[in-house]
Amino acid sequence: MWTCVAIAGKPFAQRESIELMTANQLHRLEQVQVIDRPLDEVFEIFSNAANLEALTPTFLSFRILTPLPIAMFAGARIEYALGLFGLPMRWRTLISDWEPPEVDPADGVSKARFVDQQVSGPYAVWKHTHEFEAVGNQTRMRDVVDYAVPFGFLGDIAHALFVRRTLDRIFAHRRVATAHMLDGGPAPRQLSIFEVGLQIAGEVIGDFWRGLLRAGRDASEAVQGAVAPKAASEAPISPFDIEVFFDGDCPLCIREINMLRKLDKGNRVRFTDIASPSFDTGDTGLTWTEFMERIHGRLPDGTMIEGVEVFRHLYSAVGFGRLVSLTRLPVVREALHVGYLLFAKNRLRMTGRCMEDICAVAPNSARIAGVGL
Image (cartoon, rainbow, N blue to C red; front, side, top):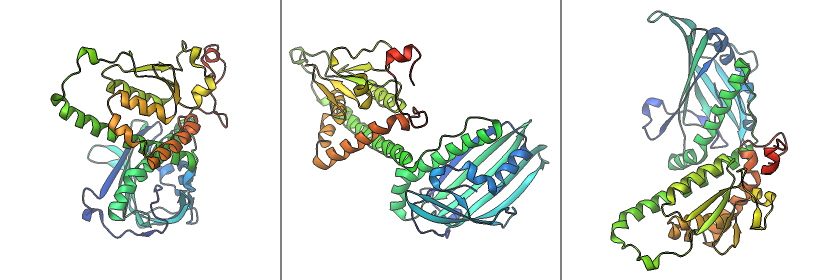
């Protein structure tokens, strides 16, 4: 019994069996977690529908509609209400298999298992198998979800863009919530639907950009042998094309910077970490706050640039000038500009660097002294 991600506001009956789905249609999500509690206790928690709301992220607006308590057995049906991105829906599941804890005569290990399947809801197929196995005084819990998204190729696009990414976040939340409930770990951070949307949009844009870069790199390597090297007299005079000022404490930023380092075969980019204790705004003419608000770069003549223009210079410097030129098209330019401003405004929150409603990072000198966030 687990919540799902919606791709349509109107639920429909599950009309296709898993056996009839092709490999391209059917997807699988699997998670294993070891819990420091005995099997009977863990099984009681996860087989009790009343605990589902505590294990589900609030951005799904999840509610159980079937009156509690719910008797669990093979054939039991449960109805839920949830919503995502403004789409309210109903979801009905059937407990198709129910195997309470007992000792497996084959190996003498206590095990338990139950399966819930969608009767009606947003998926073409949804089958969630819950498996529990005693490991000493601990319990090994394994979740296997086989699912399919409806609407043919449109569903495939929806799955690639946000369905799987949302499911990954749901199960990551469930993992932390389980540790909090049973092992006394920290409570999971509840994301708003706006934050989830921003994170997913950032990932989609990043994946698209990296795909373009890989395609450009492959094409460049294919013709590399046919291009004559520059004569020594043609070598650029400047020791670098751009200096980029990046936040080394930002996980998303570091991932991008590490990729750029690998691509920068000619050492045309100078990388400066503003999170380094040795960094000083110096002669840049900018304040610490301005550096933290958005990414900045410096050209060889000392000109400071910011935002998307920094990325244009960066990727041009590592050999993707032709692809970068596409980002100057009017519609693409505006979309990238707005998308980056949204990311820059919310990146501290997106990367878990906010405390309650305060999203700020103190300058290096203050952090070294132990002041600030």
